[in-house]
Every structure is written in C-alpha cells, then in structure tokens.
Image 1 (cartoon, rainbow, N blue to C red):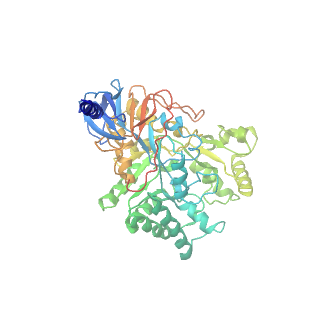
Image 2 (image 1 turned 180 degrees about the horizontal axis):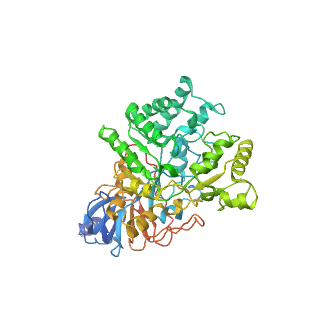
Image 3 (image 1 turned 90 degrees about the vertical axis):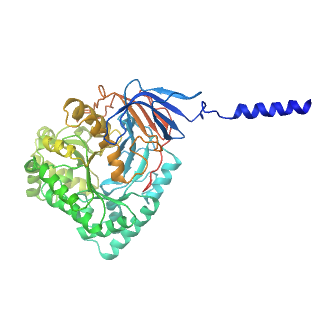
Length: 510
C-alpha cells in the first residue's frame, strides 16, 4: 500500500509539472489587437504577435495560452523597432542607459563610429571597438548597439598632429591593423568623415585601401562624404569610386545639399546614384528630416585657414548666411547658445566675418570646438532624397543634443512627412526605419516582424505620434510611442522606462 502511494505521488508530480499545449513558459508575451506593419513595405494585417524567449514565435489570429502575459495594442500600429543607422547617442549612453531621447521616438538599435569617429565608453582613452563592446556588455543599456570602424580615429592614433598630408604606405598599414582588429571584434565595416580633420587631408587611395580590408571581411562602408556644399558632386562621385574599386556596399550618411546654389539638384544626385546601382554597385543613403546640420563652426571656412578672410567671406555668403547659423555649444561663451552668428555680431558690434575668424582662431589656439547648426538645406531636396527608395531614416543625433534631431527624427517623419504632408506613406516610412537599415547594415534577424526574428518592437498611434523639439528648444521628447520592446523585454511602457536593460552588442552578420 505504501508503495502504491509513492507511485501515485510521483505520477501527480510528473503530470503537474508537464506543459500541456494550452500552457506556456513565463517568458511568453502575446501582443493583441494590433495593426501589424511587418517592415517589408507590404500591406498591414490586424492580429497578434507572440514573443517567446526574446523571439517572435507566432503571428496572426492567435488566442492567449493559459498563464500567458498579454499586452493590448488597442488598435494601434505595431512595427519592428526603429534602427538608427547613423547615431551619436552612444556618448553618455552608459550614464543614461534608457534615454527618453531614444525610447520616446521608438529607437531600439543605434549604430556608432559614424563620421569616422568613436569615443570611449570607459573612463580611459579610446582603445578599440572591442573595449567599447566589453564596457557595454558589462553595463548594458535598454537598446542595442553596433559599431563601424572609425577612420578619423585611426588617423589620429597613427598620425597624431602630423596629419595635414597624405598618409604613407606604412601609416596606411598601421590603420589597416587597427581596422582589422575592430572587424575581428565584430565592427560592421569602415566609416569615414572626409569633411572633418584629419580625414580631410586623406586621398581616395587611402580610403580605398582601408575599404578593401572591410570588404574582405564582408563589411560595409559608410561615409560622411568629402563635401556637402561646394564640391558635393565630386564627393558623391568619390563615394561611387570607392564602392567600385573596393567592391564594397556604400552608404552615404545624412545625404544633403547644404549650399543655396545647389538647392534643387537632388534629382541629379539620385540619377548619379541610380546609375551606379545599375552598374551593380550597392549604394544606399540615410537622412534626417531637418533643414539644418549640426557640426563644427570650422566647416564654414573651406580652406581651414582661419586667417583666410576670403574663405571666411565665401562661407558666410555662399554656404550659410550668418542669420541661419545657430550656436550650439561654445565652451567659453555659454550665453551664445541658441543665438545666431548675426545676433552675436550685432550684440558685440562686430563684423560677422571677423567674428567667425576670431572665434575659430581662438578655438584652434586653445584646442576646443564650437558647435553650430547651419540651416541651409533645401526643403525640396529633403523630400527628393527621402522618397528615393534606397534612403533610410537616421538621426545623426545625440542624447539631449542641441539639435532637435536627437529627440525627434523618427517621430518627425511619422508626423510631418507622413501624416501632415504625405511625402511618404506610413508603410514606406516604416520600411525606411526598419528593414531597409537592417539590410543596409547586414543585420540578419532584425528589422522585420517574422517568425524567428528578434522581438525588437514598437507600438505607436499614427494619429498622435509627434516630435516636439525645435532649434530654439531642442530638448523636448517625442510623444505617441506607446510601447517599446527590445529582445522581447518591455523597456518603455508609454509613460516611463521600465528599468529593463536587455540591449545587446550587434556584431557583423548578427
């Protein structure tokens, strides 16, 4: 009799612990009542998505399982998480791992190292992408992070102050070694900022040699091209040359024409890029939806000789008018913030050209930078580039940055360019924020709502989603994003970040 009791107890324990088809593990979540845009550019469906163990496990007309957590989308739009393929939100990310700059516009993945620069994620000086990846994995954020190998950083490490010249073969070899190490760690490829010092002094051959290293690893090339103003057409042609000679996919960062005399020539640029694609070259672009760039004041002096009055005058007459140059950060003159160069010149009774030169001379002498916003990008060109089928949406922004793009790029596209102006359909805008950047970056299991894909997801209301940052008051966060999941974990619940930190490093071919 006692033996029978033991058998019955064992049978009860076994059957009680077994999982029937109607039960599910605690890691399962069902998102119901959603209008699902899968990111491919196809028509939406109404239904549900099941998340299990961080992956999308089922899509369609699904009933909840016993004990399963559910989330009611309430008829709102459900999409893949937005991928910011040109971002500077990595700086300060470990101190602010769930920044509303990111989560409140639906961003689930950022890519860093762009413009050819990478900063350190540790208190030490920058060493390598691998060290940054280790720092992130030891202290993950709410969102995912990927890197490109940074050309400008390599050039600084190899050439130091002696960079106002072409690199020697030996120096290029040392840069290749640094890039090889970063590619081995999982960098997506090579990124350049050819309009910036020290890469400004490189030649095409140097970049091609480095791009060939990235290509040999199956990597990509992303470039802030050599000019976005006076020699922009030549700069686009150079990017195409690099694609051809290195046999590598090329992405043109924050594509624009930032000079009044170039406004309206976007169709010409697109025709050039389409011809390259017809040749078999994989050329893409990314873009932010604003008429102003954010960079260093020195870009207005093309010669980079800050005693060259002729070059400074050209910058303020042909590139950007003083009334359209807004100070972002001046480390010694915080009262300049938000004012235009014209306003400061008037307040100080100074000639704008002389003011520009003197500010840059002092900054060069004492080794600091001055950031400005230049509002000289043509509106029609923004729309032309945005509607090119190979242009993705990207912020080029930072956490609580002085440019509103850091807080509002993705929501601005959804509100202004989709809902209000109809420049893009909602379906196409979502594709440009999800599957298009995923493909451009080489991601294998992100950017689409498909079974087996990682559950980076966003719910938003297309009727109310809105950016709020302005050039005058940029640090205003977006609204209308109702939920964000990263790797199947809820990181934003529509009102606040949840405390979850599921962000991962995404390595090449992940």
